[in-house]
Image (tube, rainbow, N blue to C red; front, side, top):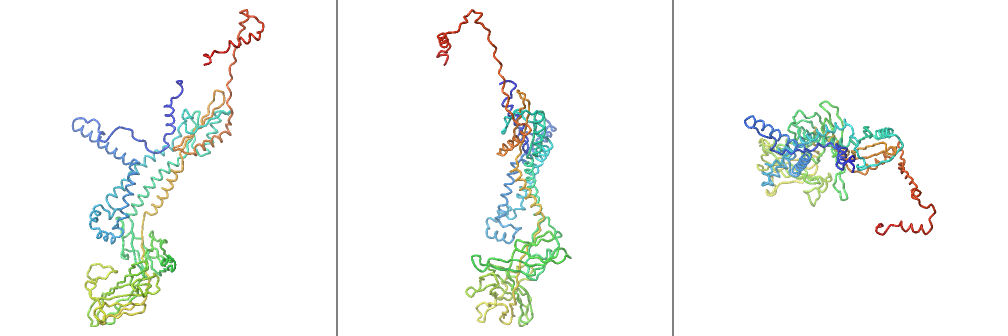
Length: 610
């Protein structure tokens, strides 16, 4: 090997330089500094200790920052965040359903204290989940910023020059042409720019690069993750969510006092509620009557009239299960439905004590409902103050065989089955009560005429229930439908959607766009013709790169048509002088015998042949 030829190590170095910066990943720190050795040599004295301590503390901070902002730690934190959401999905959360969480505590008295200490009943606001969230947020920012600046530097720079040996590249081709090297380089530069390569001519070669959107997609994906994290955080901090049960004809205004149940983020204020109102005009529900899907809802919609703002014009709208009402940056969802028997109660004096629709609580898919009626202001036949309570079931479709269970959710044969109590309801004790429960601890149940059996009656629409001892009457006047609505305000939803779309676009770009480089060299060969070399290098192996190089080479041959290389001319052998004349040899032609002898003598020996 001559001294002018490059060694294999040099060639590999050339390829490495040509293939550098195909990624925006920061270069790994190859230093040997380990934790605890940042301070270096400690000089004696207090000043020496202070200087050493400062260097040590700064070294530790830099080392921790490098570890935190590495992609490895970011992936670990993302995995931990995913694991942290599992208990939030399996264990009842206080912020979502406080009643369900409390029932879970009562049913698991051993695990409940442990879960409380770990914050598993409020995962998304716990200290450990917030720590993972903040660390992931910091890691992504610390990882993205240097990659972004490095990518910007690559965009502003030029493609790297061609290595010395293009035949060492994974994809390579060469041919000879009669075109001048300058013409070939100019044609190659124009061709590459036409194919949307960034091309630059340096010396005897043209360097081009393409596929920058791959790295842009990678950065967009990571930035989108940050956007989604910010969106989720803002949604949890400023969100509001409330539920309201409304009977046909009821009205609702978006104020805190109107909600039956309301939850909000830690930074939410009552003034953040958007002003709007709506009324439930009618609820319509139809059900499948035959086949395996009998009882499945077919029509399930609420017709409402709503107003945007305090003085908005009334507008009609139909709310369905997957079609909420969107108004004033809030969404109104239809989440439940049931029936409300309309009753009127008269006391022992014959005065009207109560009239209205009583929403009942569904117990099964056929809308068998638990009904509770509380009448706190009544008088018996003697004029004494007392309180009445009724408890029972409302059955939309009753059958004689099972009078206490509904067989179909529609109002085919509605019945109201009630039993009555008198005494003290406890509604004026100051302790809040559920409208769906009747506390009978201080009440006495009415009895039949025999004085032993509980007094109860099965009522159809229009029937009247007369209480014993002249205590009053209850009339079943009709039935209204009720619907439960959920009003949600999520300020980060739009941002989260934009981040998710951007993340998908970024992933698609980083997966399907290939970063590659192409070099074209044209030099004068030893035979006087131009030698054209073309090579390509991609960030990852791809079958498309050889196809692209072949396509570029075919396009370039239009301006640099290939020709066969010239055969080297062998030098003529000099004619030997006529030595035989000088030696006095005979000029007579040799006889056949002499020719044979000479051939025999000219044959090499067996040893010479070997």
